[in-house]
Amino acid sequence: MKLKKAHIIGGIVIVLAMGLAFNAFQSALTPYVTVAEAMAHERSVQVAGMTVKGSDQYDLDTNKLVFTLREDGGAKMVVEYDGPRPGNFDDATKIVAIGCYAKKKAVFEASELLVKCPTKYEGRVNGE
Image (cartoon, rainbow, N blue to C red; front, side, top):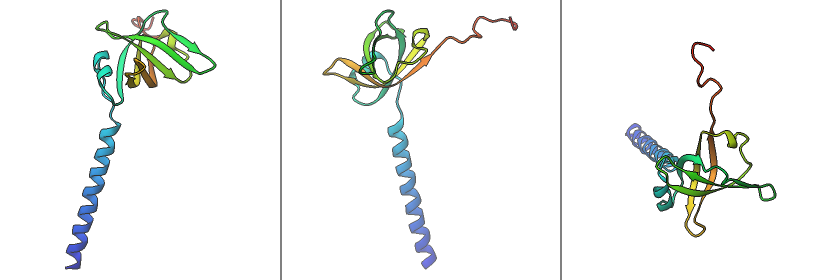
């Protein structure tokens, strides 16, 4: 009888641990969305696009980067990133901003920027 109680308690503990792990995994997911969807969401999301040329401003004193992101569909949104300017920001072919849209400020507050740059191997054919 004691063995069955131990199995039942062990099974309950395992199920609870799996439930907590699944919940933590779900909350860590950050979906890719469009600019319009980002403006409607209240949780953290990812928005991909290009920087609008000449729109970026970096303040060394506050360590804040502000730029306009344009997605492939043409929609634009102002992104504010509180952190160091990525070294390859000017050469980026695509930027992914991860964060939340602040409706009161009308700006996307990025907690992280992922910068994709052209590779030095693009355009090379047959080892040229």
